[in-house]
Length: 144
Image (cartoon, rainbow, N blue to C red; front, side, top):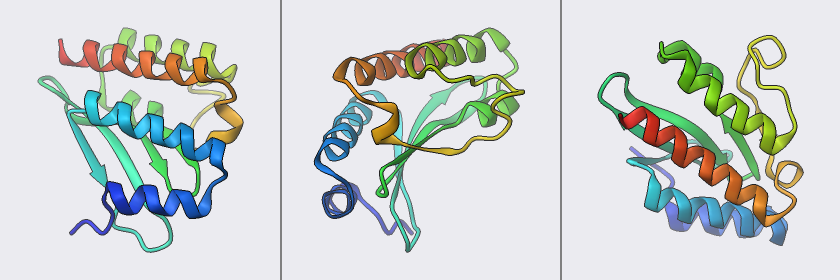
């Protein structure tokens, strides 16, 4: 049974995160409500999670990223590498993440999916827009 929902998630963010991070998370949650095939809310006690999921005919339901009430985001790129056999889809997602966040997301430099502080990754609104565009592109390719 789900412990968290949108209302509780956003309320916790208002108590835990600075206003800039609150705005970023709120933008990503709103984007997720319109673009995700499925949003799942966490069941944990310490912090809440929101997972953006995409339904695919070839690979089932896949999570693309997680948000937490502690102001963190996890890109599921390594999990996706283990599930998706079409490397061009993963490569496209990887390149978009790398160009947006100026980080390496290849298998050598980024061997496991980890949480990143949202305030460190998203400094201007255009970075949020680019991230949302990358997710839209990924979901479009996965739904083909």
